[in-house]
Length: 483
Image 1 (cartoon, rainbow, N blue to C red):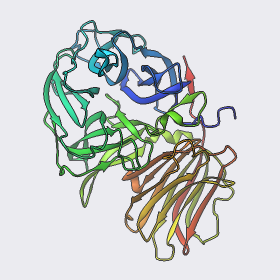
Image 2: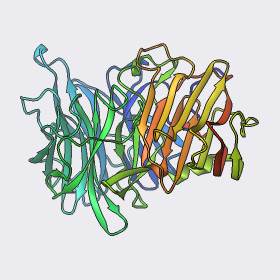
Image 3: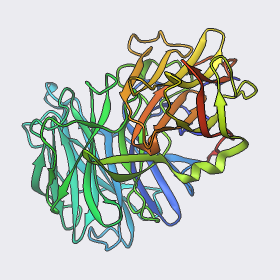
Image 4: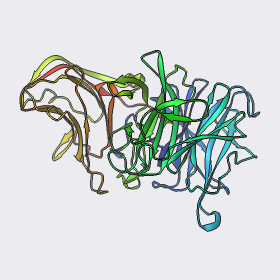
């Protein structure tokens, strides 16, 4: 294979560098995906907005670059909306991008970041930058002032903006004139790294009650090291967000190393809250061992909230459209597995979906899956029954020596639900995503195994294992085309 790590169903750029998703919006039958893109290198550089569209969030068509850097600076992250009521006057149902200009050369001392808009009246195919930019000028006292997430709330536009270790809020009647409406942060959650790429949305709990969720990228100090994503649960009054948890509370969206800067789609037609994250980590993103491209996105996830004994918590599951990629199916029910046996010895592949419901009993001490198994290679997903811990170990996942932080092992507490553990695993050519217990705990990691390492093993340690239900699917590639 000439491009052995190119994913089969995770989004990657046609070539060169990709990082944060931007401008996620649905309009006229298309899910739009914009993204941070450097078309001239496989390492980060002058940022553009790349562009792709999809009808199903699985198969994608690459489109020409939407926004180019210019004399005002680089095109950093942001969002996009459909101006249904023509509040900005750009035209009926104009698509409006809200983005950060980043100017590294200002005063030769510090960078200046301000917020700007561009608009399209042809379904996002061509763009005009607003002549009155910036719409939110640089305040003068902040180094970090970027990544606007904008959405419509009842009767006005809302902007959430990352600024150091806080999120600033602004409101506007027309996307052009903004006024400060509040802030959140000041020591809440994880503040080890700079805050980036906020998102804010409302989710129901059990059908009747609801909460607002604020997600924030943290540039360093995340659960698995380096960059990661935290979230807060609380309320929003149309102007600012208030957390319902103590300042020291930290909730992580993903306990793996590779889930950053997630954004959700505005105007999703089925009322779902679907997010997409960058599947990399700033510790080593510039060094990953791909050749013609670098950077990919996680599988799109549908979000919900669930009540736990400790209060509401975020739940994430792969979107149901991913099931269209299912090919050959290997099912088992009510199986007993003994140590040393491998129920899956005849299944091989680098693109698999595994859904396992396992009864937690006193016989076995741990169980799990060895993925991408080969000579001296494996990616290990293991559950320690005695310690009640989920472990994802990529220390032997092929090429791991390109950065000292990569050969990592993630360990996260996971309690059984009704005396059972459920693991839902998506394996692609260079990634593994584990959704445990219905998506209450998620671990996402990039991996770079040899193309020959395609074995699969289900193992148990310490005693026999009761498998209530096991489904393994071979996954067929998604379709990626260019205009």
